[in-house]
Image (cartoon, rainbow, N blue to C red; front, top):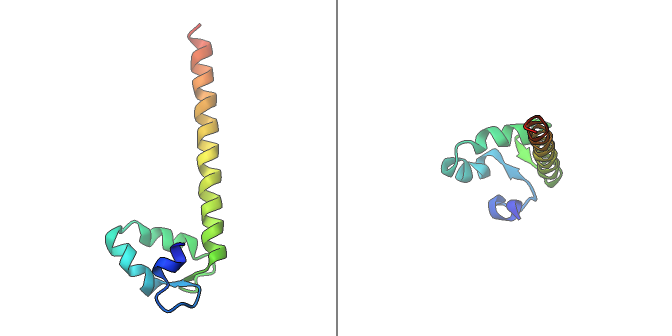
Length: 79
């Protein structure tokens, strides 16, 4: 869906120029674009976007697991 919103020329990719609209609204997206464009060709493909989304999901899951472990340790030491 992101591609449909930003892909002005309909080529199935988001160029840096096409992403500028979103980057102007939220400047932190510039860093996300660079991180997501893994082959550094100046375009985001569906595969690159999916890979970045999976990376972010894995990072969130790992953070939640660490927080749960820390909360469990804190609860055990309070007894």
